[in-house]
Length: 260
Length: 322
Ligand SMILES: Cc1cc2nc3c(=O)[nH]c(=O)nc-3n(C[C@H](O)[C@H](O)[C@H](O)COP(=O)(O)OP(=O)(O)OC[C@H]3O[C@@H](n4cnc5c(N)ncnc54)[C@H](O)[C@@H]3O)c2cc1C
Image (cartoon, protein in one colour):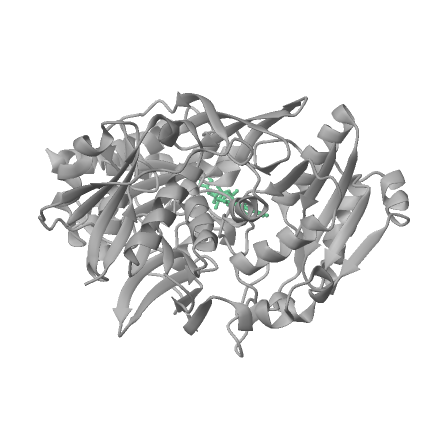
C-alpha cells in the first residue's frame, strides 16, 4: 500500500504569535516551529498501516525551506522518502491554495492508495484542508478518524464527533485525517535518525508542479484582508482573596453583571 | 435583495441553535434561505422554526443518500443552489463538519472562503467577515475577492434573534452518488445526549483544570454548571489526567467556546487554553495561586480554594434562582 502523509511545520504555540505588519500574513519567523503534534500521529498511522500491509510511506510537505525539519522528523520516524514543495511564491497562501498545491504534489507520486493528514493544523485552525484535498483529488473523505482499518481495497474508519461515532466505509484510493485520539506517535530511534540521513527528499517548486506562481500565495488568494490589528489585551478585572466568602462575592458580581 | 444560503444543522427534527445564529447573521446580508439536507420528512419538522428566525425560503434536499453519505450530499446541495440562485453568501456553522462542507463548496464553486468568523456585515457590495485569531490576540477583517463568499461562523459568536417570516418550500434534486468518491456511513452510535447544553452552544461554561484533582471531584464543577444551566468544560491537563472525557476539552486542540460567562476552576490559564475561551464575554476564575496567568484575563477572580469557593457559589446561585 502506497501512503502519502502530509506534514507541516507550525509555529510553536509556546512562543508569542504575531501577524507580520507589512502584509498581514502569519509571521512564521517570529515563532519557533515544531512538527505539529497531530502530524506525528498521521505519520504514526501511516507507519502502522505499512507495517501491516507493506508498501511505502512518502512524507509530503508544503512550506518554507526550514520546514525541511518537519520532513526530516517524519523520515526519522520511519517514512521512506519525502517530497517538499518550497517556493517563495507560496508565501501568504490561503487554505484553498494550500490544498491545490498539495493536490498537485500528491499527483507527482505514483500509485497512491491512501493520503493521511492530521485533522486540524493549530496555526490556521481551518480544519478544512483534508476535506478540500479530497474534493480536489476526487477521493472519498474519511476524516476525524479515531480508528482506521484496511482490508483489501475497503477502508473503514471510526469518525468521532460531538454527535457520536460514525462508522465510515469507502473504497481505496481514499483520504483519511486522523484525530488526537488515534495513537501515540513513536519517538525516532537512533537507528531511525541515522537512516533518515540517506533517505531521498525531492524538492519541488510551484512551477515544477505546473502551477502559475502568480496564482498562488498572497496575490492568488481569493480572500483579501482589509484590516488587521492586535486586539487590545483583555485586562485583568477585579481580584479578591477568599476569606470564606469567595463564592458569595462571585455571586454578587454575577448579579451586578445581570448574569444571574 | 439576493438570497443568503444557510446550511441547517438538525438532529432528530430539532434545529440547532447555531443555525438560528446563522439566520440572524444572514438577515444583515440579504434574504435568508435555509437549506435542509436530510431524511425524507425532515423539512416539514423544521420549517416553522426556521421561519421564526427569518427564513423566507426553505430548500429541501431529502433522500436516503442524503443521510447515508458523509459531507458530500450537503456540498452537492449547496453547490447546486449556488449555481441556481447566485446567492450573496453561503453561511455554514464552523462546526467540525461545517468547516469541511464549506471548504469543499468553496472549491467546487470557485469561490473564496472565510473561516471561523465571529461577525459578518455588509459594506457596500462586499460581505466582510471578522475573525479573531491566535486565541483572540488579533482581530482581522477580510472579504472574499473571488466568487460567492463561503463563510463559516463560530457558534455562539452572533446572537440568535427571532424575526417571524413566511417561508416557501422548494425541492433540490441531489445528483447520483459516485461510489468511487463518496464515503458511506454504515452505522451511527449517537452520543448519549445529557441534560446539559452542548459545550460550543452553551451561554455558560464552567471548566475544571488539574486543580480539580480527580474524576470524582469533577462533581464540584458539574454541580456549579448545573446550577447555572451551563455546560462543563475541561483543560487538557484535566483530560490527560483522566478526570474528564476528551470531547469536553477547551483550547487550541479542543473546542473553541464563546459563552456569555466562562468560569475557570483550578485552571492556570496557559496560552493554549486561552486560545479556546478568550472570546467569552465575561471570565471568572478561581485559583489558589495569586500569580496564575488566568487572572490576567479574568474579569473577576478569587484567589482561593475551589473546593471552598465553588460549592458556596453553587449554593448562592441555587438560592437566587429559587
Ligand atoms: C500543542 C499543545 C496544545 C495544547 N492544547 C491545549 C488545549 O486545547 N487546552 C488546554 O487546556 N491545554 C492545552 N495545552 C496544554 C497547556 O499548555 C497547559 O498544560 C494546560 O492548559 C494546563 O492545564 P491546567 O491549567 O488545568 O493545569 P495546570 O497548569 O497544572 O494548572 C492547575 C492550576 O490549578 C490550581 N489549583 C490547584 N489546586 C487548586 C485548588 N484546590 N483550588 C484552586 N486552584 C487550584 C493551581 O494553582 C494551578 O494554577 C496544549 C499544549 C500544547 C503544547
